[in-house]
Length: 209
Ligand code: PRP
Ligand code: URA
Image (cartoon, helix red, strand yellow):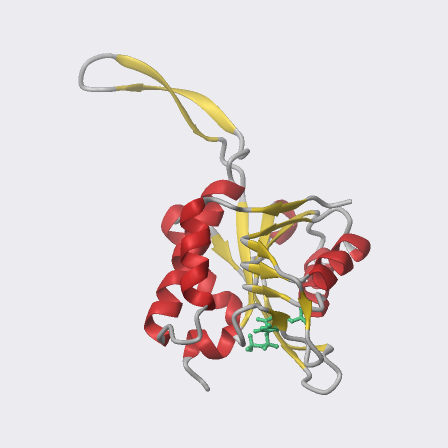
C-alpha cells in the first residue's frame, strides 16, 4: 500500500492555518498555496538520488554532490493544482509540467476530463501529481490512471488537505502511489467538501466566487 506522509513541519502548519481562514484574501491565499507547495516539495524530494562530482572552487578541488539527473515532471490537476506549480518550479527550474483538466460534476461528484497534455517522455519521468484538495479521491484517481495509461510508473500525489475517504480510494486503486499532504482532515460533508477543509480551493485561488 502507498504511504501517507503528513507534513507537520511548523512552517507548513502555520501557513495552512492562514489559508483555512475564510477571511484570508485571494492574494494571500494564492501566495501561501504556492509557499506551502515549495515547502512540501523540499520535504518530498528528500530522497532524490545525488551523484559525486568534482569541481574547482576558487581555492581547491572539491568533491560535491549534484542531483543525479533524475527526470521529474509535475502534473497539476486543473484548475486548483495550478496554484502549486510556481512554488515547485522555483525549487526545480528544469522540471517539465504536464496538465490534466478535470472538474467534479457537482451532482455525481465524478471527475470529467476536459484537457490532457503531458511531456512526450512522461514514461521516463518520476511524476508528482498536484492538487490542493483530495476529497472523494475521484479526480486524483482518474488523473493518476491517465498518466499510467501513458506508461508512467513512478507517481506521487501531492495535496495540501486530504480527507480519509480520498486517501482510502487512492490506496485501494493505486497502491503504488505515495501521498504527501499537509493535513489529514476529519471527513467529507454531504456536498463532498472536506471538513473543516478550506472551502473550494479553485475559487479561492482564482477569486471566482
Ligand atoms: C476540486 C479540487 C480537486 C477535486 C477534489 O476541483 O481541486 O481537483 O475538487 O475532489 P475529489 O477528490 O472529490 O475529486 P474542482 O472539481 O472543484 O475543480 P476546479 O479545480 O476547477 O475548481
Ligand atoms: N474540492 C475543493 O476545492 N474543496 C473541497 O473541500 C473538496 C473538493
